[in-house]
Structure formats: C-alpha cells, structure tokens
Length: 266
Picture 1 (cartoon, rainbow, N blue to C red):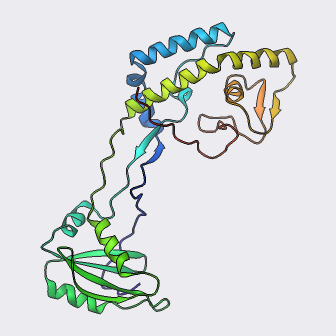
Picture 2: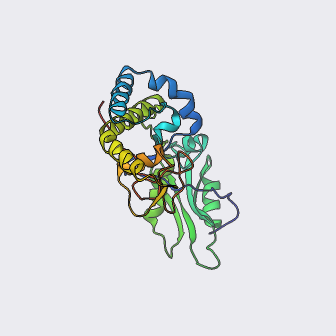
Picture 3: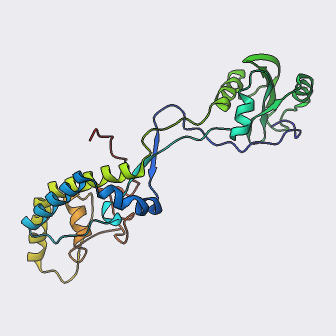
C-alpha cells in the first residue's frame, strides 16, 4: 500500500505473548551435546534401571544414541520486527518515527528531521485497489501528525505496530541443549522402563505366531506397540506409516509432529 518513497520491510509474524513456541533441536546440536547430557549421574541411573527391566522381560538391549532419544524440543524465541540498529533508532524518543503502510504490510522509518518526516508522510498515497494507505508520525509516544486512508485497518493498528517494533526480542530462559537432551533422555528411559512388561508380553505373543512377514497394524497404536515396532520391525509394521527413520516413527497414530513434553522440575 502507499508510496514507493520508502523501502518495504519484509515482516515476520510475531509470536506474541502467549507462551513460547517449541521446536526440534537440530540433529547437529543433538550430536554435539549428546555426550555431555548423557554423562549426568541421573541419566546413568536411568540407563541402569532400564537395562535391568529390559533384561528381566527378555528384550534385547539397545545402545543409547541420539536416534534412540527421538525428538528433543527447545524453546524458539520470537524474533523482533526490526534489525537491531533500526530498532534502537525506533525506540529513541528524540527522533521522529513514521509508521506507514506498504504493499507488503506495515513498516517504520526513523527521521532525524521532523520536516522531512512530515513531507514524506503527506506524500504517501493509498493503494489503487483497496484505497488503504497512509501513516502516523510519532515522537516520544506522541502522535505529531497523521495521514491515514483507512479501509480495513485502524489507527490503533498503527500504534500497536509501533510498540512492537520498538521491542527487542525477549530473552527465553532454558534454551540449553545439554539440559534439553538430559531431560529427554530421562523421560525416554523412564517410559521404556515402565513399558518393559507390556513390550515383553507383545514380544512373546508375536514370536508365538511365527509369521512369515510382519503383521500390518492399522488404527491408533498403543505406546507399547509403537516401541515394540521400533524394536522388532520384522514382527510388526504400521499400515500407511513409514518406520524408516527417527523422525518418521508414528506417535500414537498421529502423523503430525508430537506435542512437546511439559516442563519438569527435575
């Protein structure tokens, strides 16, 4: 929307203030931090408990590797709207801030000279199709001038954008790859220890069937059945689901990425 006098900013949708988005830890970070995370004493104790439960139920012992853990989640902090040099100038109360509409969304340009800022504001034109355009001239949180052609937006939308543009990216505590891997390893080992009796029962059941090929399972599998299929793909497979890699294992019948685990105190 508006004038070509100002270069448009490619805006990113902010995360906002409703929690922190979680993302997968990269394979590279997982590999680089795996040894440090699994060296923790509590992880060694969990490995010992899992190994004992596994052996007690006749299950073969697997090596604890990055692939063994599966998904590791870490916080993904929201990015700030402007590059840091522009954000600092946008937050300077002594400078004039022009918040305006472009053909790709709102943008902000900082002026040292109020006269130049006013001239630029008044030169803004509405979009030829929608009729939307214009902007606000702000200094020290006070609107000095406005030249708005509103169809779908409101003045408050411009003011809200200005406030967001001034904010630095928030610091998100807890993005510690070693700690994330440690917690994931504990969760995984404790889950496998808990599921050992059920997995052992499945092993006895399917080995007794002496099938020539893996049995294809449809529908929503149980936790134990998912783990069993990972361990014994020669006995069980899932219809329509790929079992070929760490990221391809079905999660209780849901082919979408799994929900990140809740934060724990230990």
